[in-house]
Image 1 (tube, chains in turn cyan, red):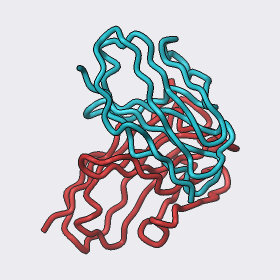
Image 2 (image 1 turned 90 degrees about the vertical axis):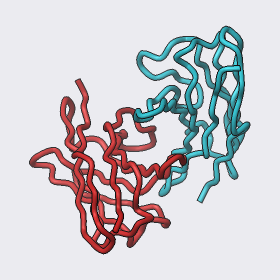
Image 3 (image 1 turned 135 degrees about the vertical axis):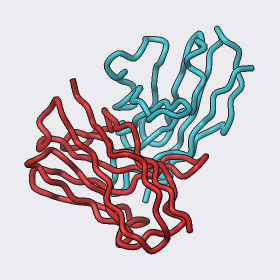
Length: 108
Length: 119
């Protein structure tokens, strides 16, 4: 089973600034990596798939990069609605298609 | 519009059985996998298993194999997650989600079903 490790666990950033979230896989997952956003009381929402492709309707301030074992989600110019928990997920080796433990993005 | 609509919240006692549902609409139900994801209170997402309603191909995470059963009835575009004997540790929010055949992320999610197991 591939282990996904996200860092940091919590990230404090001011509105308007850039946030950089990291995700590392215990072995290569090629570009088969997705990012999800989850707000309190809501289901997760797909942001990025294929490591760098934005899902339908996702603003351009969200971008993903990386391949193999190291991945990054960058949110440029944070808006108030972006403060949430973010999860990465690999879907290269399954079952299971493992999730990271999440990064909570909070307002500084 | 693609929608996954899950059944309502459940309160059960330890040892009881339970089957929750996820009804898909707005797309070809037999052409996408439906997966189940657990989220325990205050915790992260855990991939439980997945079914392809077109041919009932089902895969489980080793962590959940034997603990739950995933099934689907393609005639009514509905997938199911069931337990034969609930434990307090099964208390969680359970989400269903859709994914393409082949490799792909979960692109649409249900609203979640909260299962509470308490004596």
